[in-house]
Amino acid sequence: MRAGLQLAFPALLLAALLPAGAAAETHTVRIEGMQFQPATLTVRKGDRIVWRNQDMVPHSATAAGAFDTGIIRPGGSATRKLDKAGHFAYLCTLHPAMKGEVVVQ
Image 1 (cartoon, rainbow, N blue to C red):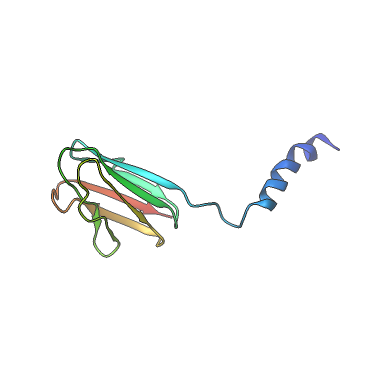
Image 2 (cartoon, helix red, strand yellow):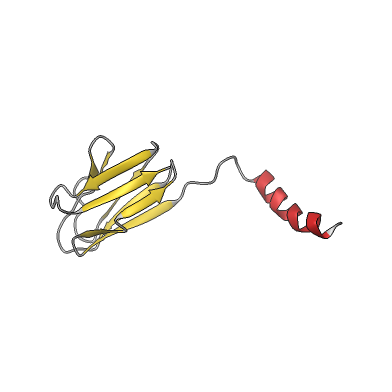
């Protein structure tokens, strides 16, 4: 087998065995120091985002009409799956100065 074809064969075989489209990923946004970290997160349609509250007070992550985690208690988390492409600015409804953005591609 030629060297170029030999190197490409495993990649072609792997691509043929995987389902169409890549598997959904899970991303984490830490809530700490009264901030969303990272402040801007880019994901793909179908990915999940977990907001983990590492602060000492409750928070939320709310994008009007797109998603709402509800209140996340200290030490708690909330997960949302995002299926619609777009730019979604969100905030903590308890602390409106806390803002973040999710970009869904």
